[in-house]
Length: 149
Image (cartoon, rainbow, N blue to C red):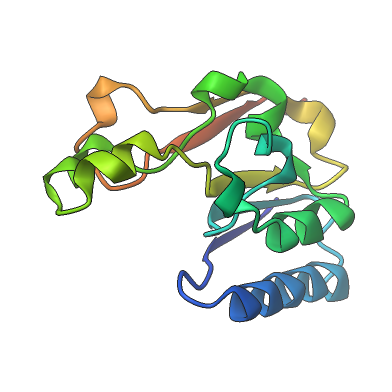
């Protein structure tokens, strides 16, 4: 398996889209058919449009990954009301704390290629109180069942 861990540009939507295009080019060029792509994408998924604020419609990055046949595992296994990864309670002490806290977003993702999709059996965004003060983002994870060959 190949693991690509990234943190896309948080400040510039056009740069972020270019980074996404470069990642897809890299996956294709290197024929990474058993690949996991994960990290802070600083972008939103069209799958979350029903519960995110109207002003958060920045779907180009995640749509780029989905168009390349990468599968959003947290979307597949996590209910809408539990699918936020940012912000945590650690930010409530900042000047914009409470306003940020009410603005739940999902900007952290784990994607897998077609070959790995059948091996994925669960996903979790660990956005409970145990993780409120670890970071400004909640950790995410997936469970896979990989048969012995």
